[in-house]
Length: 239
Image (tube, rainbow, N blue to C red; front, side, top):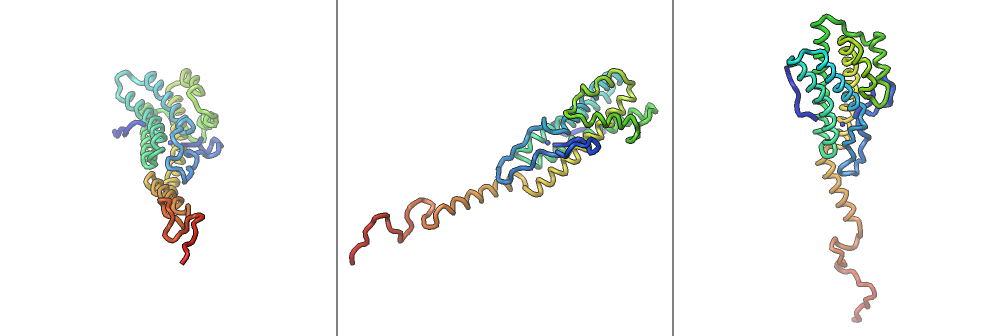
């Protein structure tokens, strides 16, 4: 089974949650060389991924057999989803390419975790909730709450049977994946519009050079009078 890349930006709550879209950090000021990035705590996608990790950690240790390799695999997939969002957000200060890459790794990790939960239900012949079932819609209501935290779901995890908790996790992963997809689209648009750090550095140097060249149309860059200029107060020599 394929595992994750290096453990490690900005999402909004899913479309069904009716929150305004904040799929990435606010648009950068194109004149700034290092635009403000890295505040992963503002990302709805990160909050949702953190809930998925907390729920998965408890689910695996409570309902899967000790020594089962699936325990470590599912927990690492959940951790990768969360940490890569964090690291990608931090890396976005200097490398939008790295931010996009790590955000994509987070998305892939959560997709793998989703498949693990689906496997859990399938091999035990438990039904997966339909996305429009009353149970799924009920979980979706909790997805509208901001900020998302494990405390919203703690009672369910502690009192419901494992097939219910697995279905809750599946709903949350779908929500997180939706947020990350929105986030990636925003990051790609920002990259196409603004480029990466090299492009910003080039623009900054050109802007700085243009401003320096426009200080005085009569003087050179060393501040001395150009040839032919008269010094202030100087008398013209008599022929």
